[in-house]
Length: 333
Image (cartoon, rainbow, N blue to C red; front, side):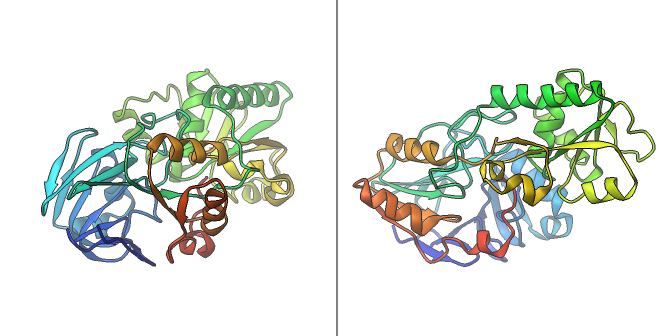
C-alpha cells in the first residue's frame, strides 16, 4: 500500500484515509485526543468513543462541523473501501488506539502515540503483528527511560504527603489532557486532599465515565489551597509565586529525565513518568511486532531510524517526521 507522509498527517490514497490529519479532509482516523493529532473538520471521523468525546470537548466547533462520527471498539474490525481496519489499545491516554490496516495481504500498523508499559489510566498496549510499522519516536534516545506506573504512583504520593506534613503545598505540573488526570487520580485514590486546575478538571467526568475514580477532588480555588495538593498546568507556578504561596513543585513527565529539567521548569521533584514509550520500550515494540520495515515519525525520527538501521532493521524517517515536535506543539510527555 502506498503511504504518503504530509506535514498535516499521513495519507493512504488507495482507500482515501488520512491518519491523524490536523487539516480538513474527507475521511480521517484520530488515534487519540491530543491537539497535535485531533484537529480539523472532516467529512467522516473514525476513533474510539473516548477519543471522539475528547475531540468534541476540546474542539466543539470543529467537531460539530464534522458530519459523520464513527466510534469503533478495540478489536472489532470494520471495512473501508476494500481494506479491513481494526483498532487496538495504545497505552498513551484514555481511548488512544493503534490502527491495523489490512490491504491485499499486507498488514500496516499505525501506532499513533504509544507506550509499551501499562499506563496509570487507559488500556495496556496490545502487541499487533504486522509487515510494516509506522511508529512515533518522541523519546527515542537512550537517555529516556521511565518509571513504571507503580513506581510513579509511589513517588507522587510520597512527595505530596511529605510536603503537606512540612506545611507546604505540593504542586504537580500536569497537562490539560492525560497526565493531569492521571496525577489527580493517583492523589485522590491515596486520600490526599486535591484541588485541580479547571483546564484539567473539565476532562475528569470523561475519565470517570471510563471507569477511573477521583474521590474528594475539588476545583481550584485560590483561597482554599491550604492543606491541599494542587494539580495544575505548565506555567501556573508563576501565578502561585506572584501570590506568595508556599509551595514545592513536582514535574511528572518524560521530559523530567533530562539533566536540565529541574532548572528549566523550576521543579524540586522530578518524576520521569511518560505517556510515551521510552527508548527501550520502542525497541521492544518494534521487535515484538515482527515488522519487516519501520517508518519513524515525530520527535527524534531521523536519529532513531539510524539507530534501527545499525541494529539491522529496515527503517526510514519520512518527511513528516519531526514537524509537530519542532513546532513546539508536542509538549505532552
